[in-house]
Image (cartoon, rainbow, N blue to C red; front, side, top):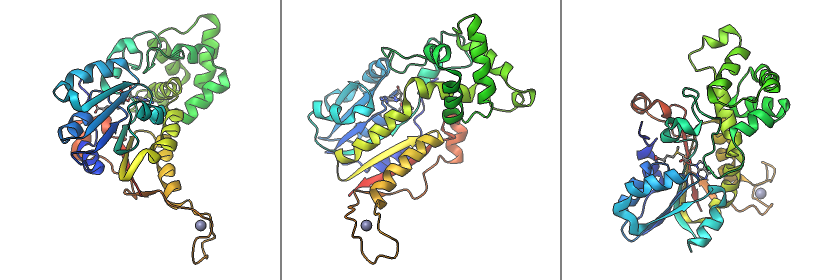
Length: 308
Ligand SMILES: C[S@@+](CC[C@H](N)C(=O)[O-])C[C@H]1O[C@@H](n2cnc3c(N)ncnc32)[C@H](O)[C@@H]1O
Ligand SMILES: [Zn+2]
């Protein structure tokens, strides 16, 4: 299935694109958002980043009419500062991060992201990275497994699943996605298996987040990105999971309301200087029409901060 860009119009509006501006798409994927950004550029420039070389290759074809305005970088958005330095860009007018996995990553069974297809346990977005799902499932301690299942997957059966993984792998290494799905299923009580959601969905999400250190990357990006935005430059982030959204929300709020003075002080004396303004008091979520057309968009939340 092709990747349908999520909250596309909302992101384009949020970026407030100027034809001669410099824009960053930190999660290129299949260029769903990038194509709409670059189309609106005159003298401007678009820098596209993705960890996944297949995203860079495929998006290169999709954006081939705009190649002279576009720079492709295979890299991690956590290195946004260094990436902009090497592209000789001091500040950008807008940045977009559409977090998580793309549909082509999920659909390519060999990548091991899907609990529906059998493949070696992998889940690396950057296929040159050293840590894969195989390492986590077979080598991390029961406690580490339990923690990621709880924290990144909000999986309430985390202790049962972690303990069964450790028991099973003592006999034989867990090699494939469907072996892992079987273990997860057998660890869950019958009533949990009757839920609408696939029983392995939360665990697979948790392992994927851990394999790719997704939260660590978001934190580093959020620490660096605002200082590389022009005055009134926009930071747009779409998250699909509550921990991600919390990181985005607090990063913007810290730069907006980091004043430490007691609330009854008439003026600020702590020296805090706001550097961002939130344009989304509540996150923007997809319309019913969008979730109908693209179920993957269901949990999406877009937050936008403006550099001041
Ligand atoms: C949801 S998809 C983006 C889809 C894209 N906006 C579109 O509409 O075609 C997320 C993409 O971000 C990439 N990605 C995730 N974390 C990354 C990171 N830390 N650095 C660079 N790319 C990352 C993934 O490889 C994936 O291709
Ligand atoms: Zn203050």
